[in-house]
Length: 260
Image 1: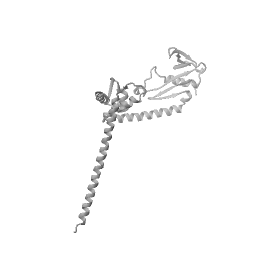
Image 2: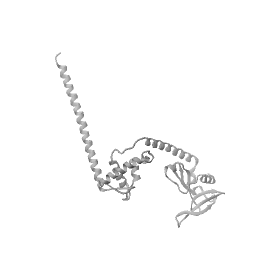
Image 3: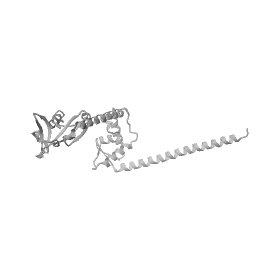
Image 4: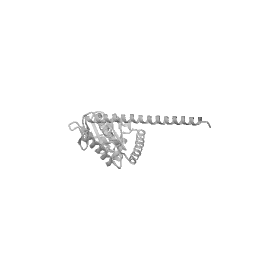
């Protein structure tokens, strides 16, 4: 593999100073973020460009802890294993630790897989937007808040955006009624605030209280009792149907036994 040909490709598809991972921006990416480690000195560099046979780089500054020292490298000093980084392609990322990882057939397979996954994502997003999403049970919001809070390593509030993703999935932001969906979750949280199950730290962060566990437990108990009562009612109904059928069968048998 030619190092210089790869450098020409990196130069054509070099990454911007700031890489946005927002889907609407990342879906357009076909870029490389490339790091270089000198095989002799061990110096670390960030690739900027390649022209006139030299690599323009920023060297790692141990004082500022940033790549901010402009420098040049002769490609002849490097090997295939001097390169590492990330290939960003249509909202997907592939790490590489050597130029050997960037053989054409691997990149081709990676691109086709990314395009197929994006196609499926677009279809899922379209189907999601076609549906009207409504919270059928208010407890769904409280359950989601409790789960997110307990899963956190720190005892910090739960961001509202995380709660929206938990309740509606991350596709909610693409829905035509996303504002209505946000209002519905906020109203549910406001209702639980009034019963002291939830504390609103600000407009974007919420914390469940200890009382929320009691509310959740009571709801589960009531739901269990309701299901048990419904099961008993269904059994009684079918028992009544069976009794009616048995009585009807006995009446028919008695009628048939009457002398003609």
